[in-house]
Length: 422
Image (cartoon, rainbow, N blue to C red; front, side):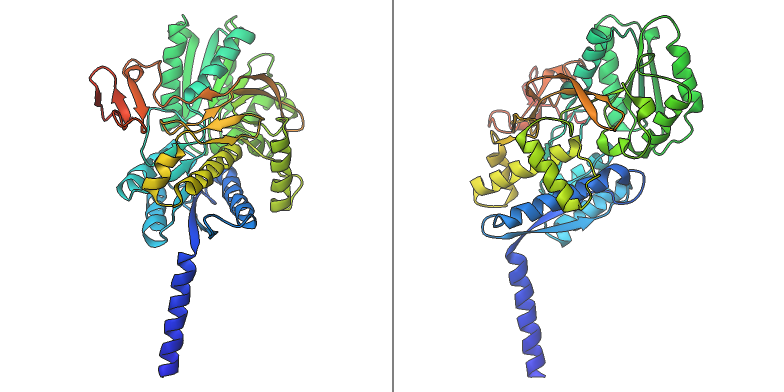
């Protein structure tokens, strides 16, 4: 009996020691449900980055240990799983979420428990949390430049703002509508439409888009349609003969991964706005693609923008941990500001005091092979947490580094934190 007790004690001590000797990395991505088409790849990206870091000796002399959970495209479950990662699993950092509604579900939990999360997808802005770093694009790094490209290069005069019915498309389209009107676009030249997650019957909506585009003015669709609803949407465009020459579509949530699910030949010429495409020419990108295909053991798998956002977020976090000499959130967070890491397009991503990153803006044209040809690109643009195109937001700034501000929503008129996160 004594031997059994001693053996159990030794086993318990060994498990405690093992836990102390690893750095736990939480992975919070949907592996089932409507968003699995996009998020499963990001789970695999984090696992690849962890494997690569461990092959280099780990971090602070410790191995990284992934802890993967599946919130199953269920927005309240994201909060529950985030709490599980922080309280039960005691992870040091979380990489996760895709939709803004899932991020907003997680946000109060992350703030309450003082966790640290890296969010890797373009979003609507109008938020800056002390506990989240936004490695995807803010509206001024994607949506606004995309509209400028359509107006300046394609001479678009009428606009269809089509999105999935949740916070990201609605807030982004609120910003875009205000922006278009500030440029002189009339209300009757803006059509706004929302559909639920997983929407599949696009016949009537595409017919309405065709009718709206038949008024004698160049028309384009600005798409914030998310998840697997994109597959039937693009198929219906092809079925009704809506070509890029007639009514071009620029998408903010469709990349190489989504296009790999169906025949892209009828979609040639339609556009997407991102900060990275697999077709980007750089040594870093070539190395990343090679590592990805080797890790996933499939030469046909593609890379995409949220993968690159995950990549730069992970690289920045490891540098901040090394700089801080700790994984403690209150030490890592201030160490993040000003960190620079190479991105995959040949430039450098810098972490800003507003918890956003600098990113280039790329407009890509869909090719028959499902890849994108870059038709427009910029230098790195600083992400803006609060848009300049909504009256109340224009007076708000985010700066977590300046001790005089130390706030994600500082009102420059009242000189106080306004408490507006919407």
